[in-house]
Amino acid sequence: MTRDEAWALLTEHTKGESLRRHALAVEAAMRHFARKQGEPEEAWAITGILHDFDYEADPSQHPQRGRPILEQAGVPGQIVHAIQTHGDHLGIPRVTAMEKTLYAVDELTGFVAAVALVRPSKRVADVDAPAVRKKMKDKAFARAVDRDGMLRGASDLGMEFDDLVTEVVAAMSADADRLGLAGA
Image (cartoon, rainbow, N blue to C red):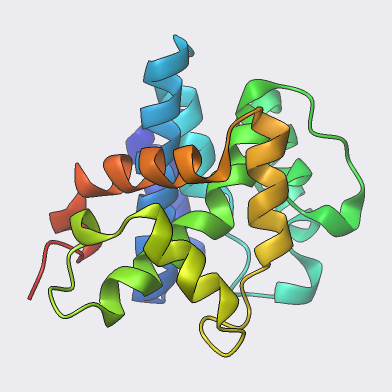
């Protein structure tokens, strides 16, 4: 599967602009980490694009509802499996670096974007770990984001949370225009 095919599959099932931008943010983070670790960048990027493709249709059955659709579309098995592991409720252990990275960056990219959008500059490049930690303490801010999951994701990667935030901000900053986070 190519990146363009993955994008077409996402846009077929996901109409909301915010969820599409989230997919792009996770793609950017996955590419960033694949490069850093010498992993197959395209496979990791496709995983990022497709990880929430079925969310809009039925959030309560995500990501398991999408599994047969991905398989029928010819998405490679390791990508389908990685997508399944990011749903904590399924209890599928995250074993590979790609699985652990997807879990670690999924919620965090959304949270970083939210932090960027409330800053006066609206620039993701202006977000840092202390700003993220401060907003994490405000339970009303981005209340749907699993703060414990973000911390667990960093731990599962063997990274300090602040270092993970720094890497995610760098990845998103490199793609800030496409993410709508380049500033006001």
